[in-house]
Image 1: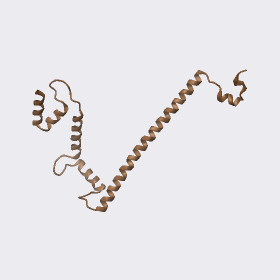
Image 2: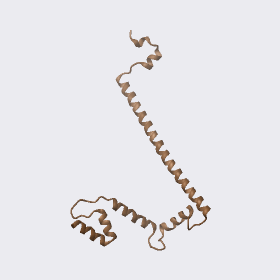
Image 3: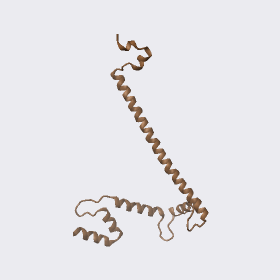
Image 4: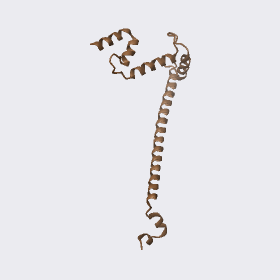
Length: 151
């Protein structure tokens, strides 16, 4: 007589040892449940972070608009709506003093940033990305970079 046969039938179902396939299946299900819980927790944390950041930005914009309305001096502090309208106006049209639209200047700035982060090459006779970008800005910098390399 085994120990299992002495237990009532409902307890035998709960405590009966499983075979190898059953244990592997249970472990696989536990692992999937743990992975699903982990992914759900990460998704909730990401949503919470994005929601907190969006709420903070909305509060900042609201405070900016309220303070601009209280001050009522668009030269000192323009409102959010005036700033957005000016941005939309100058995005496709040239600046009054310069001659290129805002999107062109934004692309130029992005290009300079990317050139600055581009890794310099170690080949002999090849200038680094920063020296090349600086040489385009001013010819005297090219002379200084060449002089420093020869020294």
